[in-house]
Structures are given as C-alpha cells and as structure tokens.
Length: 369
Ligand SMILES: [Zn+2]
Image 1 (cartoon, rainbow, N blue to C red):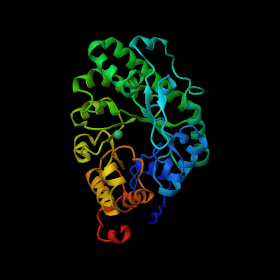
Image 2 (cartoon, helix red, strand yellow):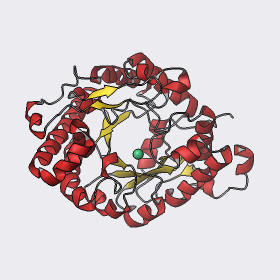
Image 3 (cartoon, rainbow, N blue to C red):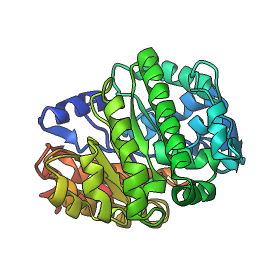
C-alpha cells in the first residue's frame, strides 16, 4: 500500500490548526518510539544506547508515515535510571526495571537532582534530539515525553513498596513524590533551555485499576498540579497520557491545568469531549493491539473513522493517535493503513468542526482498499 502524500509539513499543520485554520489532515501522531527499531532491523537494546540509531529510526518513521510527532521520548524510565534504578535491556523488547534505586524511603535524602549533561542515557538522548532539530527543525515540531511524578516515585522504590507507603508512611511517600516532581521539572527545564523542546507527561500508575480515587487525590493530584504549573513557566501547555480507566477522575485531571488529555482506548473520546472539550485538547484512541497491530486494513480504517467521529470536532482540538504506545510487531503496512485512513477521513480538518473527509465517505472505499 502506498502512503497518501500530504501538502503541509507537520509544523505548518500544527500551527495552522492551532490558529483555527483548515488543515490538509487532522493532526495525527504515531506513539512509536522505542517500539519502532525492529521495523528497521535494529535491536531495541541497541537503540537505547545509540544516537545514530535514534536518528535513523526517527528519520525513517518521518519518511515512511508522515506522522506529526517527532522526538526521542524520555519514556517511563530515563529519569529513574539516571537516579540509580537498574534496568534490564532485552534485545527484542522495551526495557524494564530490574532493581529500584531506593531500598527505603529515607534513602531519598541521598539522591541528587539529575544532571542531563552526564547522567544515565540523557547525553545520548540530547545528542539525538539536537541532530533531529538540525535536520527537521524547519518542518517539524520536535518534542518529548516522560513519566510524571507518581510513576517516577513508584519506579524509584518499587510499585509495591510505594503503594504500601501511601498507607503506612504517608510523609515518606510525599517526600519521594516531591523529589520526583523536582527531578522531572529540573530535567525538562534544563533540556528546554538547551534545545527549546516541550514535554508531555505519562502516568500509567494513575489509572483506576492501580490507584484508588482516595490515593489519587492525596498522592497524585497535588504533584500533577505542581508539575504542570512549573513546566508551563517555559512551555505553552502540558498534556498528559494516562493508561487504563480514568473516567472517575477526569474532572480532577482537567482541573489540574493540563492542556491536553490522551486517554486509553477503554475510554470514550465522545464522553470526554462532551464533558471537557471546551477546556482541553483530546488525543486518542485507536485500539493498539487488537486493531493497529492485529487488525486488517478495513478494521483499522473503521476504527480511525470511529475515533474521528467521536472527537474530530472537539472545540479545543483533536489529535488522532493510538490509545497507548504503538505495540512492538505492528507492521509498516498497518501503520500506513492508519495514516492513510487519517488522511482520508481527517481531510480538511479544523478545530471544533468535523473534518470534510468524514462527509464524503462514498469515494473513500477506492482510496483505502
Ligand atoms: Zn498508555
């Protein structure tokens, strides 16, 4: 299948869409980063330690799919790794935590804030980002994302111990969360000062499946609010992704001041739009595994159409993307099918209005299949 070519560069599209002008395609991002190297014959464990591989993968993704996003994600573990958490790097899968940095909550006193010039994999990520900016800065907006304070705190001491602390040692849990918040803000600020890029937050730990509403209010919200406030001192807005069920806490997340909310595919974009579309941009939420990785071209197109029908006219804007990370093993063909369906159904998009492509679905069959 051939990729449908577009008229605007991602940067032109992003700026025009933000101004409320009509754009060639609804903003669309592929959340493929550390999961994409196998598409280009690179082992994931090598990708993490090579600026060359990072630049190669991002360049190839841009050429092959024309998604609007670009940048090297700090992901869920770069910060905690730089603070001493030991990671395992499998050849064909994303990294995972082998040993948390902290044995006890008191140990946080011995940690220092991260120096992005030398700690962990930061120097490699900075070098790759700098090279991408040189090569693509004219035509693309380059950004990054990282774990928010809750996921960072849990990854510093281990999820189980952290959750126990929220009951048995609240003061210790708060101290760790404050340290995590300070680390995240300092890292983002230092990188922003050096490279001018912005950041979004990911908080897989903040879903209903993992954290009760009471814990969420006490241990997550204050630090989310603080992080967003401090990041917004140097970037224009801070969006968040939370995996899993979040419906019962949307109000609080929106009230914390986020500019955009990328929700999991188990949640309804339409409901989110109807409740908070006047206040936040919405991203999501194609089914990552069942459809994007494993679906047929028709199923992918149908799911794209459904997502746009749900939120394509969101007053504060909509960005089409998978409901979570693009899974390892997603074929180039399926990613092209996703981008092409976005180009067809999302054609002629304008903030707050259904894209023109949603109206002329009769001709679409020929285009896509
Ligand atoms: Zn997710």
